[in-house]
Image 1 (cartoon, rainbow, N blue to C red):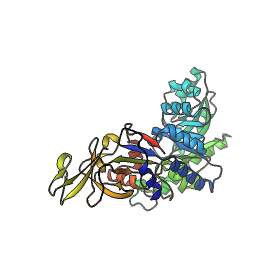
Image 2: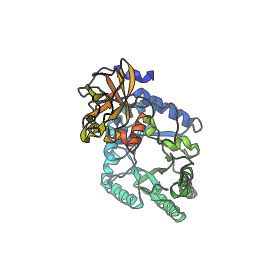
Image 3: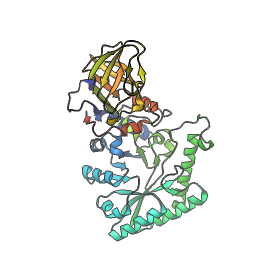
Image 4: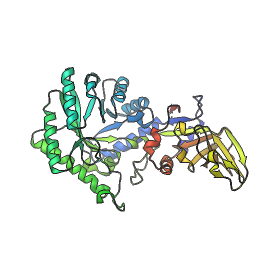
Length: 402
C-alpha cells in the first residue's frame, strides 16, 4: 500500500537499528473515523481516550498531546503515576480518570492534580472518604460497578446486589468528601459475536453484554428514583461503542482501536490504520545449504538451498520468540517482499527466509504495522492479542513520530 511505503525512506534518527515509527496522522485519522461513526447516531457523546500503559506502548506524552489537539478533553489511565505525568504534560484543561486502584493515602495528591479516581468497592469508598477528610480535600470520583467482569467494582449481578449497590452509591453521592461525577462498568464480552459454539455461561457475547447493561441501568434507575442523576455514565469500550449504539450513554471509552487494532477478529471497522510500525534493517545475508540448521536448538532445518537474512531485533525489543514462523516484510528498491521468520527468535536478533528475493544487506525490514491485521496475525501465532504485543515493545526501541 502506497501510504505505508512512505515510511521506508525515512531518515535515520537513532543509533539503534530497530525503531517504532508512530504515525500521528494515522492516530488522528482513527480518532476522527471512530468519532464520526459514533456521533452519527449519538451526536452528544463524549469520548474518553485511554492512554494507559504509555498509550499502549506508543508513548503517552506525544499521543495524548496529539489527541488533545484532535479535540479530546477526557483521558483515562491505570494508575496515579500515569495520571500525574499526564497532568504535568497537558496542563489543567482535560479531565483525567484513574480506572484502577490508588492508595487512599494519596488523596491530597489526587486533589492537587485534579484527578478523578475510580471507586472500586464499598470498603475502598470508605477508606477514600476518610483519607480525603483527613487531608481536608474533596475528591472527584466515578463509581465502578461489577456487572459481570468479576474484577473491580461494586457487585451488581443479582437483584439483592443491585439494590445494595444503589444504597452504597446514594451514600457516596451524599459524602461531603467525595464528589460523585460518574458511574461506569466494563463489558467482558462486547467483542464477541453471536455464533460461538459452547459459549461461556451458555450465553452469546451479545446476551452477556445485554445482561451487563441491564444490571448497570437497574442501579441507575434506583438512583434516579432517589433523585440522584449521575452526569457522566459510561459502559462502552471500543468494541461496544461501535456494536451497541444503544449503550453509549454520555461517554464512551476508546482504547485499542485508536491505535489501529481491532478488539477481536469478530469486530469489523474498515479504514483503521496501524499507528505503530516496527522497522529494522537487514544486517547480514548468507546462503544456507540443505540439511543445515538455524539458531538455538537447530529447530529450523533447511530442506533446500536457502537465502537467510539476519535482522537486529529480538525478544528484548518485544518481538517474541513465539513469533517464529510468522511473516514480516523486507523492502528492496521500495518493493516489499514477504519473509518467514525461521529458527528461534533470539534476544537481539532474528533470522528470516528470503529465498527467491533480491533482498540484501541494508534493506529495510518491517516487522509489523505495514498493513491492518499484520500484528494480530503475529499475536495469534503467539497465543496472545495485539494489545499485549504493542505493550511489550521495550523501552530500548526508540519511538520516532511521523
